Length: 247
Image (cartoon, rainbow, N blue to C red):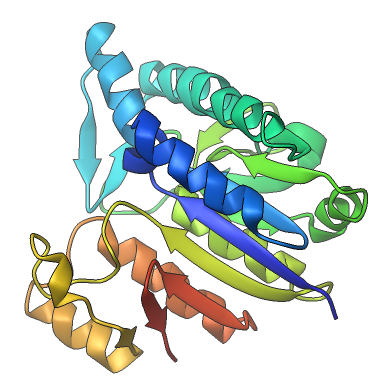
């Protein structure tokens, strides 16, 4: 079975020109089929501020009202996505920018029943792995923005880490899948301000302990939750930068 690399890159990387160029150099050098899934939250926050729209975050996730949905659609599906696609094309990578509505690859439903009303935020129901496989077999490299749709015309803001995990799971029947979450830190750190405090391996029991101690918090929580879920669904290897995630 052919191996595939699914790389999810965080907003701080894609929003800094030097780090983005370095990331895309590394991504372009990966052999075999690959998928890039990106965030762009900081760019969305900056754009919202310019437009006078308040940004609200709860547990590392963005609350998305109608005005914020317009912002993230413009920023994620437009500016950030197409900037990455253009730069990959310059490196000889036949990239195709997509969101969940394109080719119906990512179907979701609007989150309901949560303590917090996240607004137009989607929870993924289905990823069309067969369609993605067809693109990959043709040498196309999908570049996926963190937007899904509900099949009834409604776009939904969806956590990019979740999209990466769900996309990886959908490709398990067709490839040996390696999932990498790439962001500005070396990996999961005991001290967020010290890259030398890297945790090289982390299991689920470690995660529960570190979360209870407040060492793992905010956006790292959903990232690790998605990583463990991906392992449980058949992903061969999962990394958060240099930290390998174990069952």
